[in-house]
Structures are given as structure tokens and as C-alpha cells.
Length: 341
Image 1: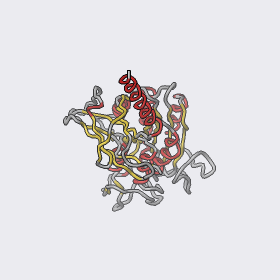
Image 2: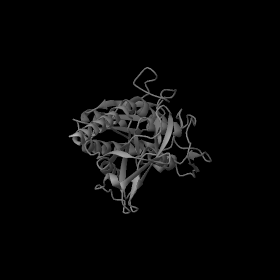
Image 3: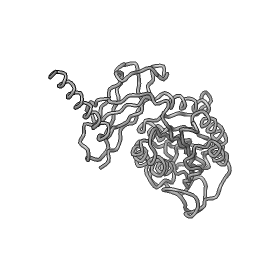
Image 4: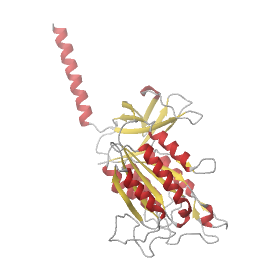
């Protein structure tokens, strides 16, 4: 009798501990996409196949699930600067077909931002595919800047000259993260359609990535460039971490000898550090194929949850490193997160 009572008390204490953990401890959620050596997505893994480290320290994976049915907030960030004008119709058609396949009107939300010198939220969060289609249809039609009093903008919005050749990619990413995604819960992703060349943002690439990380938002970058927009003259590309900041108001074709950033490296870094993916449109891989690959990733993610062993109240960036216990597998996740005060 005494032994049975002891077992009952121990079970009750364990249940209380579990309840305390589930309600009083902040859980860090990590979305992961896993591929094999043939770059095929692997969908039959278990918790035991993963190991997580935070700032080099092993963490206990307490939650594990497949994220095929959780609500999704999805944003499209479309570059409409002069260098992209000729590819916008193809982007619009493929984007709408993608939204038709991915967004579920009873669960998911979408929004559309377009940017050149200015950044504008063309369609706010909505479950309506019809409204999103209307926003995408309007992308190929040149519009005049409404100035500070018209529409919704963000860093880098406004300025003389209306819309032109300048590009504020980093400002657009920050607007999407700070003004839209930060208020949402669940899975969050933005898709950037651009050549990656930023010429007029007020924030840096590093700041744009940090805003996405703070909003727990993945960036999927699609490099869709029109090299003829820059002319046939030689161009010296510049790349590497930390690119950003204001680069002047000029746009379109850079004159001989003027450097422009390496857009591919920019888009690769945005995707890599937020846990999204980078894709490049080409003759062998048209934009429709790129969108189908992104759709497959969004339908095949794993969610890993752990409680950080660092004390609460110590803010700052914490690095996340996910390791696959099977050596022939490669995992794609965000590089870390920002703990709040």
C-alpha cells in the first residue's frame, strides 16, 4: 500500500514538472529541411536523427513534428526597379500559380511588397487569393510614388523622383519583418524576387537579416536577373558580408568603372542566415520550377523545439547548429536567434 502511494506521489510530481515546463519556459523552435546527397528532400526522419547545439552546447530536443499542416504566413517581395522590368510579367504569373498551390484560404495568410527606390506594402495580410492576384497583376504597371502621405511604407520610402532605377532591397526585407512578420505566429517565410543589387537602402544587409531573424522569418531568395538591363559594358562586382547602407540615388545601368554589388552573394547570404533557400532562374531551371522546389520545401519541414540552457534575461544573438546523425544527410536551418530581455 505504501509503495503504491509512493508511486502515485512521484507520478504527480513529474506531471507538475511537465506542466511547469510547458507553460513557464520559452521554447526555441527551429524549422529544418533535410536533403540527401542527391539533393532530394528526406521526409521520414525521427527526433533521434537530429542533434542541436546552441552556442556550442548540446541541447535536449523536447518537441519534434512534421510541419505540413501548421498555418503559414507568406510574403512576396518583388523588385520592380528598372533592371527588373522585363522579368516582372513572368514573375507575376509564376507567383500567382505558386500561391494557388501553397496558400490555404482557411489557414494561411499572404502579403505582397514591391520595391525600387521606394518600398510599399501593396497588399496587406489576407487569406484571399483574389486580392493577392490583383496585387500581382498590378506589378507590371508603373506607378508613381505617393510620397510620405500615401500608402504604407518603411525605411527608404519616399524621396524625390518617384519610382526609377534605384533599389531598396534591404529596406523591403526590414519592412516585411518588422511591420508584418513580427506580429505573426507559426511558420513564416518571405520570397524575394530580385537580382540582389541594392543601391538605395537606408539600412544594411546585416540589419535586414537581423530583422528577419528577430521575427523568426525564413527568406527564400530567387535570383532572376536581366543582364541586358545593365548593358554590355564590363562590370566589376563586389560581394561579401556586411554590404548595405545607402549607395546613392542613381539606378539603371552603372557607367563604366562603377562598381555594383554581387547580387548573388547578397541573396545567398539572406537565405543562408535565416534558414531559407537560394535559387537562380536559368534556361534549365525556369521560375516555375523554382517555385515548385520552394513549395516542396515548405511542405516537408521538420520542427525541432528545445528549452535553452542559458538563463533567461540574457539578451543577444545565440548561434544554432543542427547536426544530422546520418552523415550522408545535409540539414538547412537558420543560423541562430535573438533572445529578448
